[in-house]
Every structure is written in C-alpha cells, then in structure tokens.
Figure (cartoon, one colour):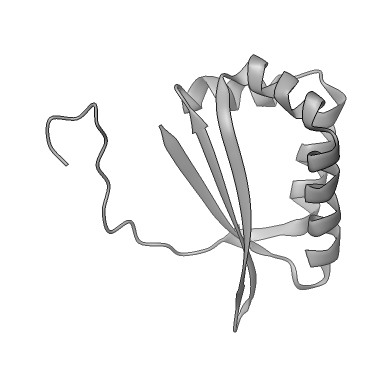
Amino acid sequence: MIKLAIRKVKPDQEGHLRAWMGELNRRSAEVRETFAQEGVRHEQAYLLKTAEGAVLIYAMEAADHKRAASAFQSSALPIDHEHKRIMAQVLGESANAELLYECTAEDDAC
C-alpha cells in the first residue's frame, strides 16, 4: 500500500531539506537497512513550489504502515534519529489535500 504525507516546508528550511534528501541518496545502504526493519519497499520525496511556499510530498510503500511507523519510532539506527530531528526542524503543518480517487487490486470495488 502507498501512503502520502503532505507537509508545508518552513520558509527558511528548504535548503536544509534539500541537503538532507541528498544525504539520504548518498546513504542508501543505511536507508535500506531501515526499510528492512520497517517493512518499507519504496519511498519518494517531491518538493512542490506553490505561491504559499514549498510543500513536501513524501510517498512510502509498505505492506503495513502502522508496523513501519512503530519500527521507525523505536529504531536505534543513527540515520533514523537524524531523520526525525531534521524533519521536525524543516517541516511545518500538514498541507490540505483532498483524496479524489483510490483503487487497489486487492479490493473488490474502487
């Protein structure tokens, strides 16, 4: 299942967010170690520029998002601790987004 997080980026923190995403790209082996703990298969992060400022759209694919969140919160991995700290620093409130359509192959109906 895919889950999206859509959050406003604090105005003075876009550069720091970009630097951290670049760091995650360079530390992909550590990221994959977190995936193994969390049951995550795939993540993507998009930066959307709007008239009201930047918005981060973070997509994550996992079989069980509650399990993934629990594993992330209790993780002892240094990269997870850094990720929590940096994301708390750079992200603001949730951005409003309306889900207009969803369908999965496992459901009988969309």
